[in-house]
Image (cartoon, rainbow over all chains, first blue to last red; front, side):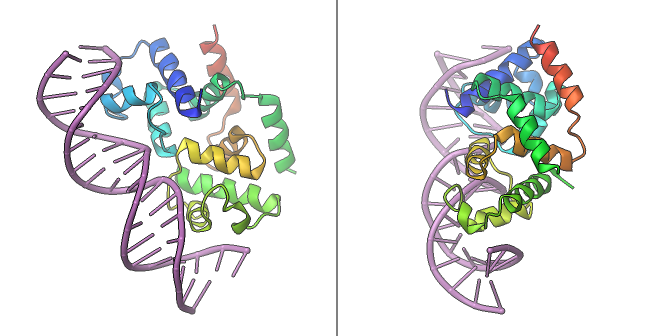
Length: 88
Length: 88
DNA sequence: ATGTGACTCGGAGTCCGTG
DNA sequence: CCACGGACTCCGAGTCACA
């Protein structure tokens, strides 16, 4: 599974969890485009990720963290450690 | 500050912290493009974020979290709470 | 309500160079 | 070592028709 499919899975999981249809999200991005993202066909830009997360009602980092969980590479302890190293 | 500039700041901070030049990162993305990212002129795709983080030697989520810290919207407690809600 | 193909259009991403 | 420009290619992002 590549990162685009992982993002698509994360997007679909949150969207269905919120009980939203693809059509209801068309204010953030077109319905057809949302569909292609969920199938892992395209790689969204950071700006697009922000708009989609806003429409889902979650923080962009929530969507992105879930994405990397699908990739089985969301080792949050490693991330926390790396951030700590940067902050000093 | 918009998200592209925030990402640019995060990228530059980590790059300089690692003592890398823009030219040394040209294996992940062209030197000119790295420069334009750091100046907030373009919005990278998820795939590009992955390659850049790989070249920096950090997890993509580290780079992205630092990005949202520049936006002053990296409320990790909120993110953790949202993830917990998704997981049950 | 979603998937798909065909089609646009602007922007992501490239390489050439200059200061 | 980096900022910045122009010219270029390719794919992100959208619209429409139809299944």
